[in-house]
Image 1 (cartoon, one colour):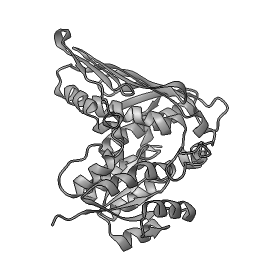
Image 2 (cartoon, helix red, strand yellow; image 1 turned 90 degrees about the horizontal axis):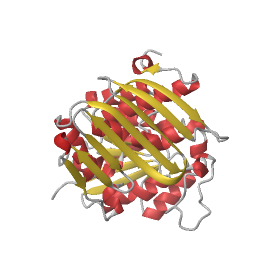
Image 3 (cartoon, one colour; image 1 turned 120 degrees about the horizontal axis):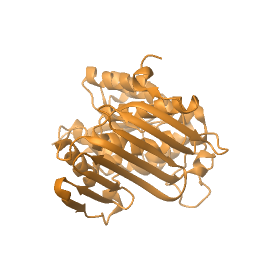
Length: 354
């Protein structure tokens, strides 16, 4: 009889109850052994809703008692580093929600800790598992299109209410158990706003598909009366000389996530919301990838948790590695620092010496 992967989840907020807990409970070869949350009321509500008996408010105690094979960390952004590091040092594979951490040096420490401990560090970016994204990544890595020269990555979404502290929990059926509350409006919990909540997705996608790494970033941000940034704009110089723009608004009337990668001999044009992708190769050879009829195929939200299970059972490799998370953190860390300095350029190397 095949062993089941024993998974624990730290953080029982809205995303865990909407995604991670159902993913693990629906996986035939996984066992959800425990839930952990520092807020007893939230922990009880989630554990009761999904019938989980083992409940902890202290993740150190949970790790020591349950000895899980893998852990999913879905807590407020500012807590990711401390919790994920403790799990890796305990010798377990980890899914950490995006943004991986808030600061580049913390990201480097997590990646190095995972390497030393022989553990996989998976960052919770579901788009990395989409067939369109995987095909675009393969084409980019093949060298067929030549060197990247320019990238454009734009994410617009309607999260103004979340950044203002209103999570729409008073709307029937808005969340399966409970909403995020005011967490996304509190800098000490979330770090930044649009950048850390949404553009992290877009930037992770950019680095995953293109293989690029930022060298220097100029960032401007505006809160528009909110506690955290609502509109972000970044100009980026990448290693190798490519240039690009990354940005978006949380006041988007229409949700949009576009990635364009323009190379010496071709281009990749992706619309992740409409799930359309066009790849143009040398000689203007053009390939149009078919849109997905099923929304979950375009945004497979269960994929990071499922990837954790498959890694533990020796049936898969890491589909969203920590190195990509680190590159994303570098971009955002530099952008927030640049915006705080009125848009002055921030070199990525300086993030590791300050």
